[in-house]
Amino acid sequence: MKDQKTTPNIAEATNDPHSFADPAAAIIHHLDLKLEVNFELKQLKGNARIHFRNRAKSDKIILDTRNLKIEGVRLDDESKVSPFHLESEVEFLGQALIIPIHPETKSVSIQYSTTDGADALQWLSPEQTAGKQFPFLFTQSQAILARTWVPVQDSPGIRFTYEAEVKVPSGLMAVMSAENPTEKNTEGLYRFSMKQPIPAYLLALAVGDFVYEPLDRRTGVYAEPVTIEKATYEFSDLPKMLEIAESLYGPYAWDKYDVIVLPPSFPFGGMENPRITFATPTILAGDRSLTSLIAHELAHSWSGNLVTNATWNDFWINEGFTVYFEARIMEALYGKDFADMQFLLGVEELKKTIEGFGDRSIDSHLKLQLDGRDPDEGMNEVAYEKGRLLLVLMEQTFGREKFDQFLKNHFSQNAFKTINTEQFIEYYRSELVKGDSAAEKAIDIERWVYGPGIPENAPQIRSERFEQVALEVDRWIKGNKASTLNTKNYSTNEWLRFIHLLPEKLRPEQMLELDNTFQFSNSSNSEILFAWLEKAVVNAYEPAYPVLKSFLNEVGRRKFVRPLFKAMIKTAEGRKMAEEIYKTSRPNYHSVTQSSIDEILYQN
Ligand code: BES
Ligand code: ZN
Image 1 (cartoon, rainbow, N blue to C red):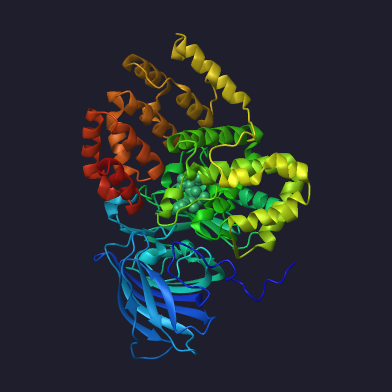
Image 2: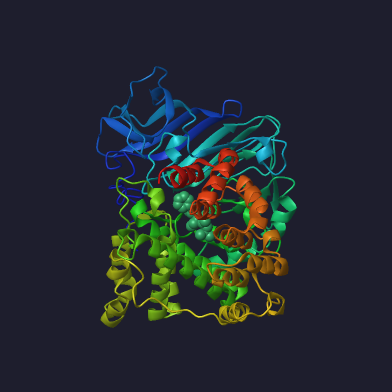
């Protein structure tokens, strides 16, 4: 193995278009955070001490901030305040915080508080939680929102360890992406330590009334008391998932792996905060059918958290690898049939997304061009599903055994490092292709990475069970009663396929027949309900409107909320309903979801 010791977190740390930091000059290696959580003011207040290496004898260190109130800066242990300067605001990126330093300065201390513009934070009233008794706070730092609650070098290429002390109102517990408490303490003072170096987008904090239930020695679940039982049931395969993951791609590097179930406004399905995945409660289906999301976040412990995309233009290095890895876990756990159905659902989404972009669009390249844009724009099926397709093509071309060994080496040799697309291509050529020019040509990686659409050599997958679903849908279209269809023992994936295969336009009596027969509007499975509600909106199926309204008022998961609003605004009637619903639902959404819906409703 090559010498990795001398430059642990630098080589790739430059050229991030979404950070003001100049890591070649002065680069953070440790963060000491002291915060007080104030639910009345909806404010975090405290101190961030940045320990750094001055690699170029620089006379300043540059940090990323956005909408922070900087109260004072001190160098090292000095008691007197030191000058600082906030540069002017840049769209999406915020403001560079420039702190003059001396050649011998080792750390800077920043006294600060957050403001209403802290987009990472969502402050929830008791009514917005499951238990309805206590307030709740959670953060979402990816992609570039860490800087709205901590002044830090907010680039995926810059890693640091951290320690934190967080004061919360008594009666509440706090967890971070770090070593965590498993019980409340009466003072409400919690200490955290993250000993493995992580990039800023993996900084995370949640505060609320939750309890911990271990699943085994290494894994467990945090959830509100009223949810904990359901959650532990749902996630009971976690220990097995972790073992499978390790047997595939090497030892788990983060000691513990827990999941915290957040309130329904959490804007994503899951977020791979190290040691503690943040998850939406909408995966609690009661039958463990939506847990591939947990496999996905767990897989990020290797792809993403251990080997990290250098910039958000290389997002597929995080997500494409993770979708591939997730599918391997699910295949080992539930079989190839299951994994193939998920795969097909993913490809279906990818095709829709690319169609929406137009198939020449640069946004359908794996290597993204997000400079000057919000990196959030890269968060779509391209990185996830086109990325996965490329890796499956490699697997098929070189054989699973060889490919697994390659990936395993990739995770161990690049552990705690950053890698960009070009470095991966180089690594792929030297460690997998190894001069096999026929294979190199058959894959044509450049076409995948720097070209649009889905290349012609994409792997083709088939699912016997989905083919059966298609036959049943056909029978119904040809006039057979819904009640005569053979849908016995359909899994969630088959129901999703069933709904997706229905004709775009359906008559009211057809919607009614399907609903009465299959009870879609009453589904307790969020994915099925969502797929059905989309149909309901497109076909103005009024009996589902009450459910639609309460769903949108409660759930802030963008993957569900955005398509429903998009569908509603296609007609004048629908737009009226959308605006009506949004009046009451907007305050329940996290800023990430709010921005997306604001754009749909008011910027077109
Ligand atoms: N890391 C992502 C979430 C993310 C990406 C947040 C970019 C902010 C910016 C997470 O791992 C993820 O991909 N979540 C998916 C679920 C997954 C099963 C595809 C989600 O939330 O929908
Ligand atoms: Zn992911």
